[in-house]
Image (tube, rainbow, N blue to C red; front, side, top):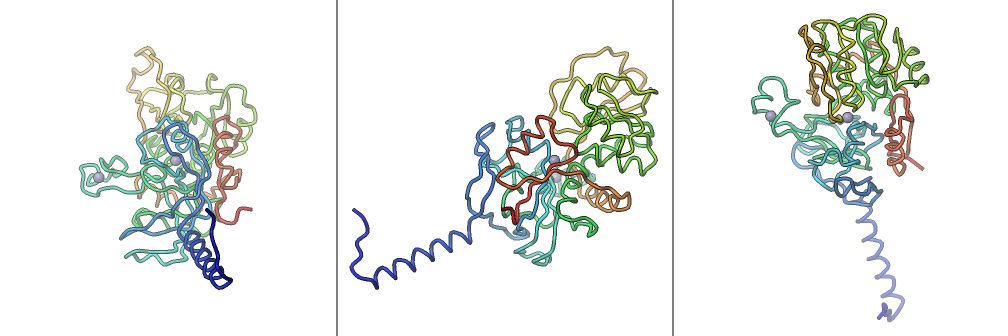
Length: 358
Ligand SMILES: [Zn+2]
Ligand SMILES: [Zn+2]
């Protein structure tokens, strides 16, 4: 049976109640791109806004960069997250509520992948909080940035250099700073190779060139467009992943999630050189002759970031004059951005525009 209205007065009261309910719902909900289960559908939904606890801030998201890690989460390669997941961990937003912390509402913050560490485990106390046993990551265990609102532990938010607008700075927050951590692991290496010339490599090339290093870019075989892109950013040599550089390299960083690149890169480095694997996930590494590792060559991974890495990169990027090359997508098109990343259609980085999309 439908609604019975006895007179106009009752109808007015009814309308007032309904519009109050709509307003309340509007004020407490948001649009977000959500993943309910590993490998499941990735959809735009309306969902409650995160509620900040003590020490946390509620942030109105302006833009959020797309990272290959988001792709691994959505594709179900990484399955330890807290579902349902709103991915996205290169967040630029505006503080709208600060619970017991001195971040002023209205201030711009950057929220990176590292969302929480315990502060007292052996790794945290040794200055390697990136390895914390109880770490929580943004857009995986904690709310992410492919949403109108997110929340973050205020201690893990970065102030952002004013020289960058929201869209430009977003890719620095993961591609830039985890790439920077990987670059630091190559020590004094001068002749350096980047395997996989995407978001991280395009930022790191600019920093490495500024530091006086000789960057060698290895793209998918035959990818002339990316090779030209790399040369345009200052790489002294660019070729396919199965090509040999003119001289042996001091170090190589592998950004592409392709295990076969590890023995390929190892063949191109000199004695004592290092191959750094910078991704969170990679296909299996094929076996290779011990002779390729002999001569004190090293293979290592880089995991996550410390807040110190973030502060240093954000200080250094403006000095090095880093500019990010980006493709912009609106929030409802986030899945398309991930498809384009998966299929190698993006030069540089992709950024999702959350606030003010049409
Ligand atoms: Zn810890
Ligand atoms: Zn990332």
